[in-house]
Amino acid sequence: MSMYGKSDKAILRDLGQRLRQARLRSNLSQQQLADRAGLNRTTVSEYERGASTSTLTLVQVLRALGMLDELAGFLPDPGPGPLELARSQGHRRQRATGRRGQSPDDPNEAPDDGPGDNDGESSW
Image 1 (cartoon, rainbow, N blue to C red):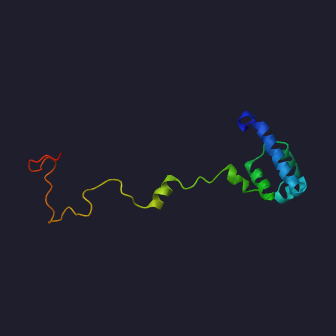
Image 2: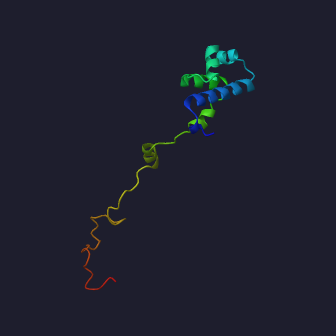
Image 3: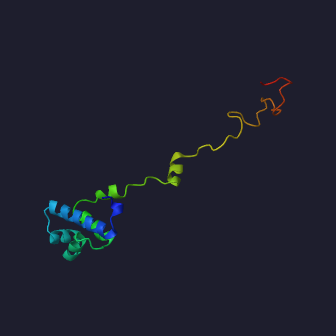
């Protein structure tokens, strides 16, 4: 069943069961895990039963189980934001400002008479 089809309480129970299995795979009692995480044993027990607890408790339990890296899959790094990307790319031209490589004050440049001045010849 998809997680979206489960109630919040069912998801908490599922999370508790997964943490219990991880604790048992690490061969730790609830008290040992609680001591490592700096929690009370009853907090670990409640978490495993699917009780609503804080995010801090989740982080403490995952740290004690050596599973903090699992959060990377849960909350992947978003990468740089738009402002950071713009800063890292440096200044990029946004529009043309005239003919490239020629300064507007170049006395050797022939004046541009504008469109339509082509000595009577068709440009087609």
